[in-house]
Image 1: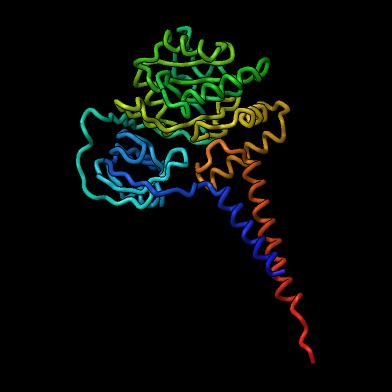
Image 2 (image 1 turned 90 degrees about the vertical axis):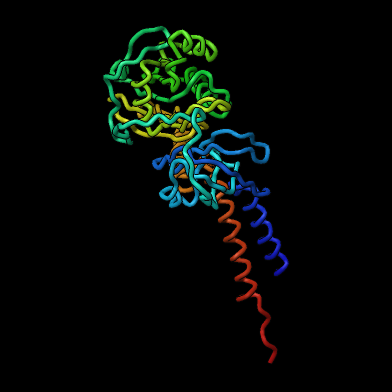
Length: 343
């Protein structure tokens, strides 16, 4: 019986190691310069030297513990341990080893004095944009429709970022035909992404302008609009534009219902949420998956971006059930199966 208990405990440990968000791998360390601190997102932008298989470039990183963010300043030279498994990657064991001005010409930070938007706020409905056909529009044009709003730029080369968002939009477009739901992508590179460029990009993803609008406009207008969602944009000669993420669900009255700060959202789960907001019958399993995914991110961060909330719940149930059974067996061995003393 004791052997069984040991085997059960070993199995539980192996399951835990298999599903834990952080892969067991050799630690990597970097040296770099802090370009900006994104306090609202618990992230930092670092221009780092080459490490491991990563070339020298600028990247957005999560920071642990979050209390370190308050001590970091633009221009700090740091060393840190890197965990590349999450998206964005995570830094911990951060040490400030010096301070210098950010390298000129490497990163350009766009700072804005705007009022951040949060869940429950109403979108700026009268801000004017231009769509892929060159027509002016504002979010008042979508009153009465539930809107999914995301931010991309057409020259993005990272398949985990803008192309993934647009691919998910493409999947959603096929499923919202005839529904009061509209998809909107606003560019983060308005100087390059003219209506003609957006039209070519829209063609790549077969975007129907009646269901899916791609927007551009004056640089300051778009930068300020993105900044209201906590999006900071930086130009890097190697990686292109470095930016944080935000995808918003907006109700038919223009009120923000939810903001997802990752690119790898599940289109089926998001569709269920859009339908729920639009008061349209939706797949209850997919909607539950959306809610559980939100809860998992809130509790555990973005270690497993795009992971199904139902899968995460199932893994937790398996682990807790296994642990409970192992404890039960151990208790039975100790307190019940003890041989009686011989008189």
